[in-house]
Each structure stands twice: as structure tokens, then as C-alpha cells.
Image (cartoon, rainbow, N blue to C red):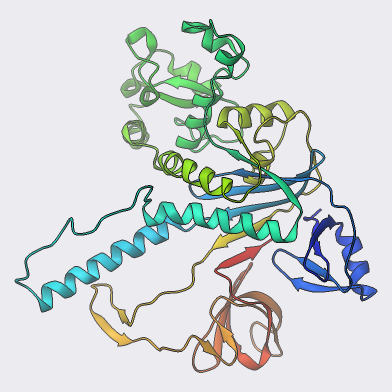
Length: 424
């Protein structure tokens, strides 16, 4: 089943989400109208005195994708996976820097270089990292408008729960608790792509493997650990990795390079988690915290599938969980376009001026539209994200691919551009 449908009354007060069947009935009886399509929200034509139940918003922040889940009485009633554009921002800034340096060199070749002439306020984050915080907070504020959220749970830090239960714990006793191994295992799963480093097999139980065997002097540092299936782990034994992969030089180079490279995604999450937590506190809602190990422990204990929105549902203390949905809303940050005054070639030289107009024939790039094409290769009805042209002959991207040409007279707006694209 898809997500429950958000409902607000005529005064825009959020009410409890309803089943899609009830939403269709309200529309058929003309007691409600469509307020927005993504996420699908109805607005009643009358005020309501309904007493809303408590709904908890749970967040699993990620470097590339953040999971969002709404829970009511231990049931997942709405979920979404928010894909960030941090790498796109980093690439755009690098491109802008190269173009500006190119221009300075052409026009002011002998200008003395300037640096360290800008100050950064306390708590500054790089644009690609700040984007992750602001995008997540944007959706928190949006969901608060459409659902009666009473609390927020965020996956944040690692609390020493064993020391809280047993203040005298020390040494190797830390490895014998309920959460033993989950923190390191989760790190390795993210680093090695959830597959065997030696044979590449997926969807099978993986074991922690020492690149340099312990019997040969290998340590338990994360840089010396990888993941392997049971067969590869047993076959390698305590042999040197160079001997074990002597017939697979490409795999050997990849593993040795990956073992020394930092986990960039984990660093991004660590850099933004406190900033996100502080911003969430400013909403005025109670914010509870959970660790990555606790999330993994809950998911394994409850037998929940590995998905970003289900990871969010498992954040914090979870005794039981009922999953009412199977199709989360897929949200992808697309930005609001570019402010470039000219288009450049691949070498950074300007080749044409950009138009100052963004809307043509009543549509903008990023609008989600329904196009009913009467003839041609793509005859039929299509729904997707639009790319406009001054000529009135547009293009659109749907879930099955690109559709072109799409003339303006065949387009009907479904959802105006808001910086995101959506898919079920």
C-alpha cells in the first residue's frame, strides 16, 4: 500500500492522515479538494474539531539519502526517501571557481592573488554539507504543516549504554553487550557496499574479515577490516591477501586502495549531525536521539527490510513495529536552476548569453505536468518533470525515460516547481 493521505481542514489545521480509499471517497462526495499532489494532501471544505493523535517523525540522516518516517502507535503510516544533491553542489562550485580563475587570468593577468579575506561565522558548514541540513529541515517544516507531529527522533550519536547500566564495566567486557559489533559492522557495510569484497556476492550473510590476518600481526583497526562471505573467508584463512588474490590483480588493487581511503559519506554525516540536531530543537518539538548501532539492532531484531525510510522507523527505542506501507515517496533535490549569465563550453569560455526569462507559455523548468500527446512516437498520456524552451516545444522526463517533443498546448500543470522531483 502507498502512503496514507495527509488531510488539513479549511483553516489549514493538520488532521490525522487517512487511508487512500477514504481520500477517494471524500473527493467523490466533494467534501474535500486536492491541496497538493506531492505529497498528496487534501483540504476539507469545512472546519474540523477532530482530536488528532500523536504522530512521531523519525529521521535517519544520510550523506546521499535521508530516510523520513511518520509513526502512529508503533505503525509506519508514511515514509519518504530524500536524495540530496551535495555532490552536484560541490561540482558546481568547482566549475564556478575554474571559470572565474580563467576569466581573471584573461582580463587581469597581473593582479596579485588575494586569499584569507573572508571570515566565517561560528558553526559554518561547507555549502554541500549545509544543503543536507537545510533540505532535511525544509521537509520537517513541511510535514509539520500537513500532519499533527508531536515529537521528532533523530539518529545522532553513540551513547555508552553499557556504562550507563554498569558503571564498573571496563576492558573487553564492552564487547559482550547486546549491541556488540553493530557499530563497526554498520560502518563496514556502508564502506564496502554491502557485498563481499573478494567475490562481489550480494544478499548473503557477510562476515568481518581481517585483510592482514590476526595470526600474522594484523590489528582490529577499521582500516584492516573488510567484509567477506563465509566461503571466501574460509578459503582465505590466514593467507596474505596478495597470495589469495594473485589471480585477481584488479580486485587486489581495489581492496588495498579502499582500505586506505576515508569514508567520505560517514564524514559528511558526522559533520552535519549536530547542526541538524540544533536546528531541530529550534522547532520547539521534543527531540529524542538514537545511535546507528541501536537502529541496526532494532532492524535486525524486528526482521525489517533494509530501506532508508525503514531505517528511520527503527531509530531510537522500538519494541514493536507495524509497517502499513510498501511504497515510500521518493524525493530528489533538484535545486532552482542556475544564475549564470552565459553558457560556457567545456573549457570555460562563454559561447552564448542566457535568457533572462524563466517561464514560457505558463510553464517553468521543473514543473510536473501531464501531457496528452495525440500523435507521434510518444502518443498517449505522460506525467513527468518538464524542461521548457522559448519555442514552446518542450521536453519531459518520466519514470520510463525522456519524452520529446512536447508542445505547450498539450501540457497541464500537476505540481509547480518547488526544487524537488518526486516518484512513487
